[in-house]
Amino acid sequence: MSLLRTVKSAAIASLVTVALAGGAQAADNACRSAARHLANLVSHAWPSWNPNTPGSARDMVSMLSRKSSPGLVAGTARFKLAEYSRPAFTKFVKRLPRPFTPSGELLKALDELQGEVTFFNLPGTDLVAANNIGGTANCNSTVFFSLRGAHANLVPAPRGWLDDVGGSCGLARSFASVDGLPVIIDDSLDSGPSLASTLTLTPWGNGKWRTPCAARFVFAPHFDMAKTLNDWPALDNWEANACGSAGCGEFQRAALELVKQTQQDRIGVEDHLLAAMTAAQREQYQRLKRAADRPDLTDATADGDDAGKPKTAARLTDTNPLLLPMVADNRVWLASVGHFTIGWRVFADWKVTVEAAEADKTREIARFAIGMTQGPMAGVSVK
Image (cartoon, rainbow, N blue to C red; front, side, top):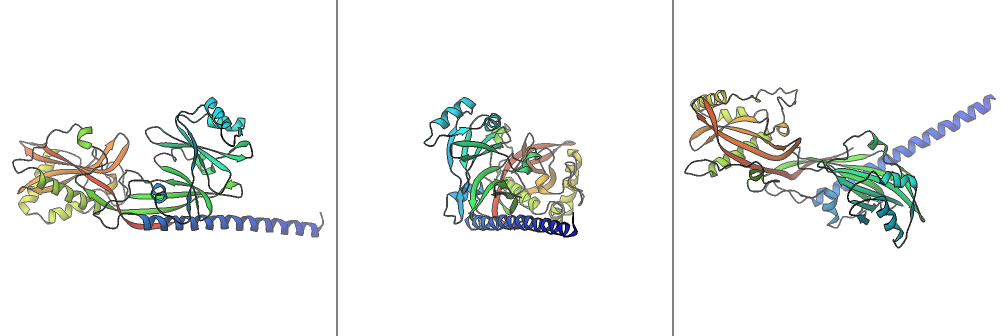
């Protein structure tokens, strides 16, 4: 090969590399621009602007679709099969106003879906998403295919999904167009205690899935003594509280205050409470802790958040709670605070128990459920 030809080949390869890099950068910029627009829509539509009102109980895209949201076009459901099977699917698509013939590869992929399957269009494309939500973890299973004329062919899922085991569980998946960019939107807003949500956008462009981007939202808490996600007393078979002749109102208000302070400052909450108590009350509290003979999580280290000694409020659970002093009815009680759990699931709602001294032990006299949901939006970031 001559020197001139070698130089020319190298120059062409360099131009191709620059063009590909420029195309990828443009796609990344388009995704982040769409994520910023979506974050702006959510910020303006979010119903809670003060701690006394809760946020939305719906996923964010559903919330936006019920309002006027410029630049957002939600994918519509083309059809739904209550119980997917290959015969039911092939029979149904033949009766559509515009029937199509699915490829063998597509039929094989759809055979992996079970139960109810909804078929959505991806606005601005010829793609259809067959989505199924199943299992106790609400896992999404999605198969994509293109509709060109009377033929339907399988389209590979985004590359990042292949190695992300469990990554499609516990989220709301939508298909939409944001500022003209076709995207899959995965909303991680859930019932957990993190008070955060991430909208992950996976764009489609030039015949393939592009690198995803995300808008992350952080919320301040909204507390409620009357409303919780689940009916915890019924689920746990709680017996009647024994708060005394004055009733449980003061104890419940004290429980709410403990939850608020723990949420605000998990590490320093015990010190703050002890500082407001008399020496005699502090000594009484220490006697209660010794009598309870339970793990003490108050010395959680600042550089660790393991299950044994969680340093954040989100990691405290009803099976591994934080012990704190409660002053109510002119007495000191031993309280425990932690998030409700069912199996592996951790919920945002708080469980507070109250214990009194009994001989050389402690005895539980009351339990309270304090609801916690997303309140005012505290921060938004796009990456």
